[in-house]
Image 1 (cartoon, rainbow, N blue to C red):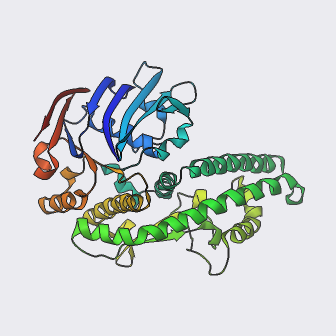
Image 2: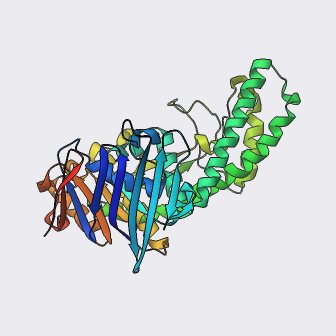
Image 3: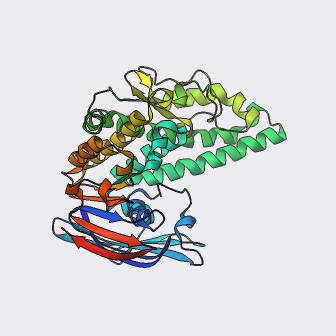
Length: 388
């Protein structure tokens, strides 16, 4: 799979843009703040339904515009698709494939990409929500149906939290909350499906992660991913508390039954706090290197290598499972962070992908083998495109 052409209207700093793409490596060069990342962000959104930079779609719509439009021509096995997305400021987003309307959440069925950027260091060093979002975006790419599962879970969670807050305010007794039991069953149904899918995904990432880490770091530091599920936790604290105690699982206990049991055990505490305290919205994944948590123990270089390896492992997993070919691999401002040796290792690691999109502020930071098709960008405009 590869992109052959990208058109933008009122996206970020682009009033309009028409960008041709080649097979293989495509390098976008320009000073910081000129719009390089905006180009690849638009493509990343098509495959993950989110930005790697902001949580709100509104930030991607150019100032004073009511909507932003992304159009990408995608080619696979001689077949070409026109994928279109309209981000609206005051109405629901809209999407089309070959001019036929689809739901925006179906876009990942038609286009697959994996983007790595400096912000991804937060996967290792940041809060649990960042790691949950990474897993959920990858789940959606593998099976777009999970966009609906996750959306439904979030709606049920919101309703349940509203009920808990209302019960706390009105001092309703636990035995008077029959309505809560109804929400519990729906929460358990959706949440168990999501947790099981995440567990399966973590397992499938394990081997590609080890190989990817070795390919970019040159060492085998035994990277591991260990799921931490709150439904098995002895204590449940606020998400941002540093002493949150969770464990990875309990042998022989099905997720559904464990979730039901956990909700029963924390019911009184939830009523006191007006908040759902267990479930996939509070889970985490522990990243380990050499048996130690990467967060807090790994050096900057090791953390960077772990995050990069995690994205390369994701790309490899999508490549193995996809019927539409390789995902488009996007490296946003990555090479400036690497020494010469690691630049070469990364160039080798990505050389087999059908299409790789790279952004850089300095042309010389990028190995020669990745500069065959170079596009220079200045102030939201394409000023030069060259082919070696």
